Image 1 (cartoon, rainbow, N blue to C red):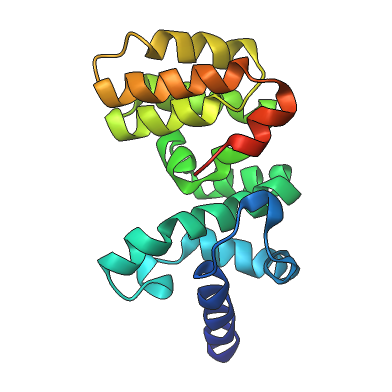
Image 2 (image 1 turned 180 degrees about the vertical axis):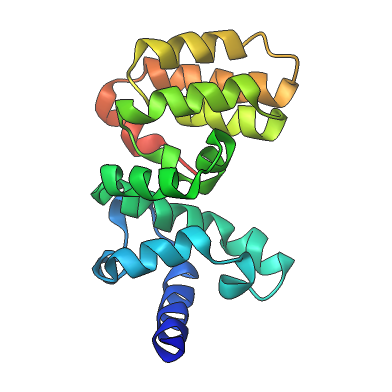
Amino acid sequence: MAGSRAALDATLRALVRRTFRFDAAPPELLALGAPALARLLDAPDSVFFDDEMDWRDYGGNRRQALAAFAEADLARVLAAIKRRKWPDARVVLSGVGLVRDARLVPVLARAYAGGDPLTRAAAVEQLGGQRHPLATATVERALRDRSSDVRRAATRALAQLKQPKNRARNSSED
C-alpha cells in the first residue's frame, strides 16, 4: 500500500506542477480515478509542494486538478466532500466552485455569507460563472461588501454574468 501511495503521489506531483485549466486537464489525471481524487482532497500540501514558494506557484494547479475531477463527475466529488464534512469555505478555496453547475451555487452563496474576505472574494468570483438567480443576487449584494477586495471581485463577477454564455466560460480564470 505504501509503495502504491508513493507512486500515486509522484504521479500527482508531476501532474499538479503542470499548468492546465480544469476543462482541459491532462487525460492521465482523470485516468488515475478515485484514488487520485481522494489524495488531492486529503493530502497535506507538503505531498505536492516542497515549500511555501512552490505552493504559491503551483497551488492554483492543485485547484485546477480538483476542479477537473468535479467537471468530470461533480456528484462523486460532492459526495466525497460531504463524507469529509468540509465547510463551504474549504469547498470554495479548493477550486471545485470553478465548475459551472447549479448544485454549487448554494455552497458558494453560503461561503460568501459566512466567510472571511478572502473566501468571500473567491466565492463571488466563482459565482460569476453561474447562471442562477441566487448567484446574481449574491454578486449584487457583494457590490456593497465592506471589503474592497470583495467589491472588486463582485465587479469582475458581474461583468462575467453579463457576458454571453460561451464567452463567460472561456474567459474565466483561477
